Length: 161
Length: 363
Image (cartoon, rainbow over all chains, first blue to last red; front, side, top):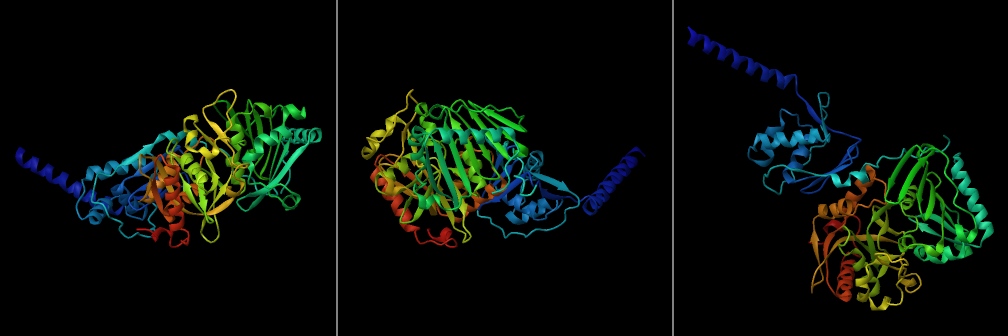
């Protein structure tokens, strides 16, 4: 009896998990949004430079990180991101590496998760020239003194004010 | 140019300048930063003689001065004019201090004031107008002679729609090579090598950047001066009699090429390539590199605390610059002749590149 009860519990857990997955994909889907106007970014061929004026920091993303960044900012949801990354690279990258990178972007307030942002930007053609490598974000805090000054000054008031 | 600010301290410094110019003879010049006319007025002959060579891009003469101006720079010498530095009584809305300097903002950010022991400089950002004084022109440091406007130049340039960047620039036959990178990379060495060997010189440390309607990037001379370590001076025998050595001693000697090389001083030119110099031995050469290397050198390595931050638009402009133009690593060896020859070759190679083909013009 105890054995049958255990199986039943396991079934219930599995069923609950299964339905939760279904629900989360339909209801709790989130999209990524660049934290503008505090954050500016520029995508080069195999590197992305980011600027966070809020924190006074400059960031550099390597090739794989840049590719994930492209996917994130062009409308791939959080649920779909691992699959999209896999399709881009032709392999399934370690989920942990992708998750840690995305978490780093969120922690640095470079990107914001937003349930209402479902608009797709222009989806760029794959720029892959490099094979998959662990996505990294290099933080340059040594510009903090310089960048923290911006925006130190309000815009110059227009004439007639 | 808009209504005057109602800040009492700024009104006071304006009155002080008027008194100073009445007390001592002034020197007036006019020229362009970007495509904006700027007039420079110095009250005090010694101050003008000391500082004006660094503004060599500005021309004397009534013809130039007759043109309508957009910006102005008015500075007096306290000792020669007998007009002391006016005090600051208003409460700033924002303030930042560093080693020997304080910058304050007044009137909702419209006015900036930089206070240093040697100078007081006010900037009206809306009117692109600098007014200020130097305590004593006879004791000005080489750093002040080389870049008299210090932290105000960046904001002043912004008021004229020009972005000041930490770079050197040289030219040949009307096009320019931008030299970027952190301190000690060899920007000054390359720029002076090129000047020594007959190329044009646009500046050693500060260059104005703007983008023309045609999509071309333009570099502008902001200061016609260069400062180098004494151990390097023997590299340029033609400049031997031109160095100014500071008293009391400073780290670097000053060179203002306005008197010795006036025909090689450039005002503005289309930038056709970017180079990141680095010191090498026995070999001068240029190697093509990816845009992000030049961007990082320009944006991250070349940061300069004499400027105030960067806007997202400026960030985008620098990225656009490096994505559009061909970028190189430039090996700088012991021979000014070889270094200048490589620079000349780069300038000739990209001389006819248009804005749309620049990034494809070289393998």
